[in-house]
Amino acid sequence: MYVLVSFVAGANGVLSYNKLLEQKKSITRQTEVIQNINNELSLEYTALLRDKDVIAAYARRLDYVGKGEKLVKVNGLKAGETALYDTGSVLRHTDSVYLSEKFCKACGFTFFILSITLMVLIDLSRGNITIARKKPMVIQGIPVYDLQQV
Image (cartoon, rainbow, N blue to C red):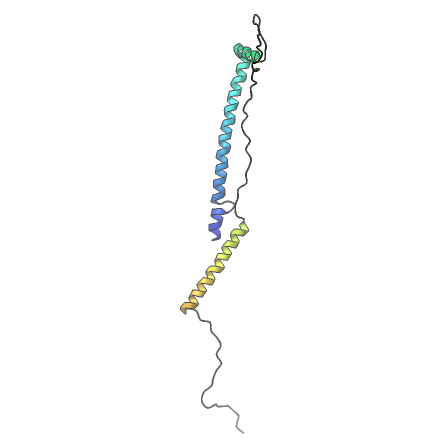
């Protein structure tokens, strides 16, 4: 019983193992998302360093104009949106829920006591075990005493 409870619900049991596998999968998915964000930002950074058209597009968003260009602002229109970059979401560590070692041992010991008690009661009811009581010795017949003769 102890082995069974420990194997299923103990600190290193099947339930704890499955919970840790779920956490591992979640962390792996989140790592892939963050890696994709990193790749996109690296490409954007490289484009900003080398591509003049990309630099010009970003400058126009910030209301800069190049030589020979004119800036026209129309009242009532929304200002240019600022770019917000997705940085991923925070993952919180969750502890695994398991039964303590003391509880597993107590379950095993309780099962042992109950099974021994049940087996003894079954044997008593079938007559395989009898509880011997001391019966007083009864002497029947004529008592004979060994006395010295004078």
